[in-house]
Length: 353
Image (cartoon, rainbow, N blue to C red):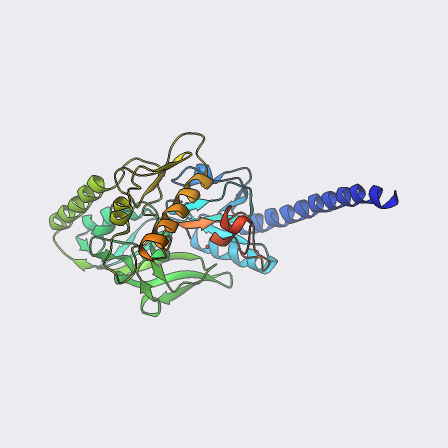
């Protein structure tokens, strides 16, 4: 009898302890935000903050407005052992439907303005990438016009070395500003490895801004190339749909097009719940309706990957970032291995554009 009575008592005590721990952690996060001078929000959802319009509630959303604030904030979070992850425009993120139990640092307000000095431009991570391309064209500066149709922020473009139509941002980066030890530190672009949709920046590293070295050209010629790239994008990709851009990378070194191969497998238009393979471009998964969930998009993406393994012997790599709900045992914010549906359970635990 005693043993049966003890179990509920232990469960109640455990719940009370968890509640108290959450309050203590919340008070600590509020104090960190107050000292850093940043806005702290609760109750926001990834469905409000990402282009796919799906994803669960965020434990804490912290919103710095300057590079210095952002650096000091993440330095304090690291020192306190609080797991965090940075979110830019959310145009390359698929976030789990569950409650995300870590701090999300939003860089949307870390934008300031683009500072031009000859052929150089300095810009913060939260600055709009399409807007930067337009302003550079007005200045008669070439080198990024092919990126003008890519949604998102400069920080997201840096993190994944965004590229299109012969231009990659890594080709023109002179320096990158990152947060280290609570301070803004400048890193030469030559020290960064700029690969296809990937860089050598480490998980958990916060990119704050950069200086680009562009080249002089006729503004009208630059605008013409931008318009050509824009028209190509609009004619071949789902414009206005709730998407996160290309879901998968092209198989590296193969010259193959993932979108074309998905189309040839007959999966264009395939639907799972509120998610479907775009009828316009098969490497885009889009969401539709109020009932759409991240698990719908993830299930569809995993089905595509399984078909690729079976029919082509190719392991497709995600181009979107999958954000799980739970931090890992080391306190790092969650990644794909903790996403709902991955091997049936959450596992171990960084920048969306």
